[in-house]
Image (cartoon, rainbow over all chains, first blue to last red; front, side):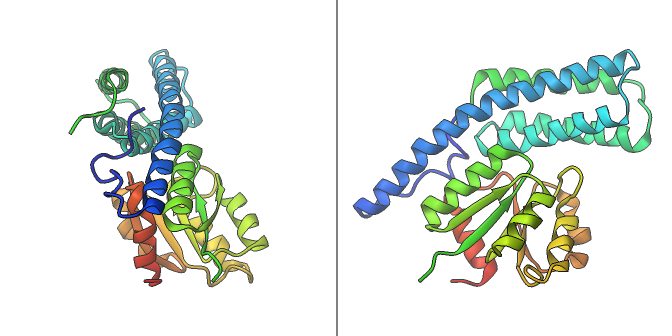
Amino acid sequence: MGEPRAPESTPPEPSDPAEEARSQRMVTVLSGIAAQARQTNARRIEEIREALHRAESGDLDHDGWAAAERAAHQLAGSAGTFGFEQVSQAARALERLLARSLTAGRLDDGVLARAQALLDRAGSELSRGPDQD
Amino acid sequence: MQPRKVLVVDDDDIIAEVAKVALEVVGGWQVSTATSGHEAGELAAREPPDVVLLDVMMPSLDGPGTAALLSAHPATRDVPVIFLTAKSAVGETLASVPNLIGVIGKPFDPMGLADEITRLAGWG
């Protein structure tokens, strides 16, 4: 994934060598975590996709819905942290959609199609890379 | 002076790791992490932190539940808690959460996280 939360997370202009070293270390370590996060988020998208397939065939129980909602929640938080704002927004909308269905205990017309569209958008944006300011 | 001790609790281990790195590198603090409320309770009881940074939405035991668990243990009953969450509805439940001193939104700015905690905890 990209650099975390530009521009807020952009390290400040170093005023001394210690601060410069600290900023550089942050960038290095967070870049490694970001790469890991991108893989994890791609896996979360596939997990949700699989859950939606099961829902389509009427084979997704309450726990399955809850797991899909949690995956969407984590996707939204993680993607936003690493500068994938579009992924985060799509995942947040998906999380709300799944939560409403979970609470209602039923699938209203069009819910699966909307969920699929949001998931496709998240997957597509994740492939493109982090948002540019 | 001893470094501040912070416990970060988030079921997303990547978010927990980002917070840990941010607080260690920028704040110079001693940071431990837990990925569940129950694990947080055990860790905090063994070595009480100065503050707990706590995710709200977690399976099994959520943020408010974890805060209640911490407040019920003699070793951690006074440890301040800061919620880390993207949930906009969290405000409705704040009043009932023991030792809650503030909320930090997700996604958070890694470079500013230590400053935000310092402000909320009154360490400035």
